[in-house]
Length: 278
Image (tube, rainbow, N blue to C red; front, side):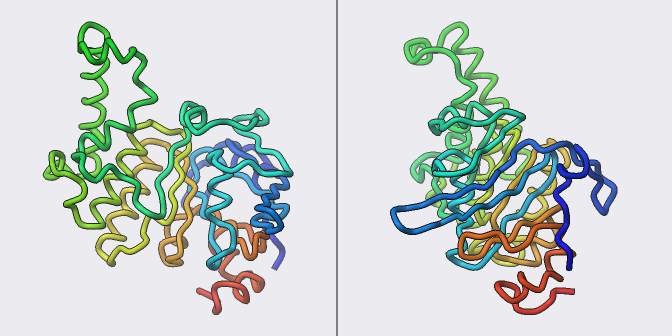
């Protein structure tokens, strides 16, 4: 099968199979190579993420997927290649600078404050939108009071959107796993990201929880217009959610295209899928 050309090579935008128009590339990874000592985690990979799409990154364990997500969100700095974000080559940045650029993420292993309530955890996602100083916030007066009120109102909207009103005052450490994953998604959404990175959002969930999470991911993309890049092992989820899929194996890219193209790609079948998922 001939590999699909990236939309950015043909035009600035493209139309999905269901008729949605996807915008130009918001992020381009060009010849990215990442090494840890003598170990090459990512080797010469190029792909892009377009505005408004759901872009999946898949591959077997150890393929380098999480390392790639860490490169995208600036936690790792590649030794070779360049990252173009919103039309500009991105220099090495610190995590808080990445957050200010509009990139938020969830983690494979839940990273919540277990002793804090659902509302308070989601409020931590608003930190990049809090501009008053520590003293003003402690006194809770004037601008700090207005800012706090506005941020709490936004957090409550996220809680309503994710249908977790009943647990808003519950410490997250007491919640079942599936709800903790939803709270973590809420915290990322509270940052109002233009690019949302999801590291195995369905991991450890039962069928019903996966259906709920899939619905929320689609709603985030469709209603908020948020661009999403996700790592996921459940191929039925990937094939249902993703507009395009990039496939990694041993740190290399072995496939890139629509879900239909990827699941018929013989190199992908041999390395990962095992059988054609027609």
